[in-house]
Amino acid sequence: MFARDLAECEKTERRVVSPDGNWESTRLLLKEDNMGFSFHITTIYEGKDFDMHYQNHLESVYCISGEGEVESRETGQKHHIKPGVVYVLDKHDAHTLRAFKELKLACVFNPPITGKEVHNSEGAYEILE
Image (cartoon, rainbow, N blue to C red; front, side):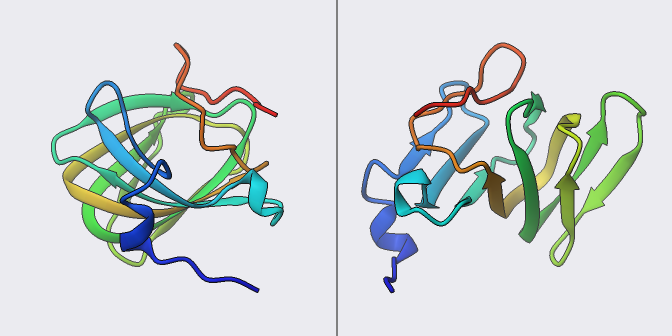
């Protein structure tokens, strides 16, 4: 058993800020923790709008605070994001995420990420060992 403090992790290499300035994420659980998934607290900055397509990972996302929407790039279907809503990318969905107000999200990835990943040109994380 172990415990981690978000505020403490934010002071370490577990806090990652996107090169494009859209988001930051503190990775509380990573592949090295051997849980079979990774768990992150991610902030999407207000007014940001960007495409992602996790071709190698499944992701579920729970909204802690803020407001936005996620849109399927394949179907155009939109889901409103607000506190208490979870959205699930269960089919490696290509999607656009929009933050109308700064979003604070709890994200789970399967398989777990290592913490060194960056989004590629298609908005995906590569599998890193």
